[in-house]
Image 1 (cartoon, rainbow, N blue to C red):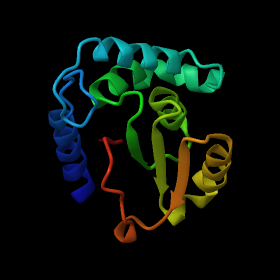
Image 2: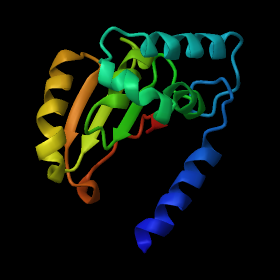
Image 3: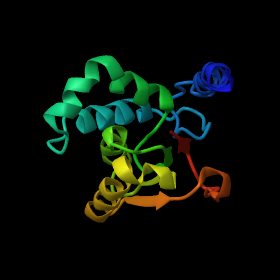
Length: 149
């Protein structure tokens, strides 16, 4: 019952907090050309050769361009991705934030069978990603974050 109530409330809060203001995702005032650069980075991430055919097949249902656009994530941002698991969005996020940004991937210890090994491998292959496996109740999240995903 709590999960049924919390998920819609959480989604409503996320959507309410994701005004596409064209800023850095941190509530900054819009910057001329920033939205164009952000959308170009999102499109480049979608077109990345690193994305598998399986990832691309999921795009129709997941609508990554719209989700990333609403999230406000921009090149150079520091993003926390809670529940990175299969790396679908992680692959997109590291491409959008680029070499000047960072993505902290945070999974619970129970994710080991389907997320841990893949998360560590992804971290090793990407200089702008860092994998953390920690109980969410004990996690100490960084304070210098632009977007929580």
